Length: 159
Image (cartoon, helix red, strand yellow):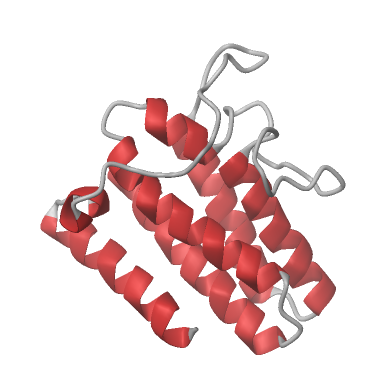
């Protein structure tokens, strides 16, 4: 698993430094089965705010000392990434991105230039989901650290 995290981080960092989009670096145009966006209650989408919020919760997971807190923050990340229509959305957990958009994965696909970053967000989602199911605190925090780095790189790229 550690190799997966390092691989995702390396891809995101290299692509960001080189000015490439990770999707272009992989030859991908995005993937997944997320619903198309519909207007949020306020009608506006703030993709950078969504990414920053999700990255903050991933970082909160890294900084947590209890497995229950790590798990909860990682599920907040999943809720931000997938939005309320996502297949892994957890209704019982907070969605700290509520009102910022429809879910990062949905909104990236709709944003100009955003679809190329969808594989990075999908990687962060995979790390958050895997971390939320772990029982080893250090391993779960490593997943959270990887998700935070990927989300931070995506947020910085969408200036």
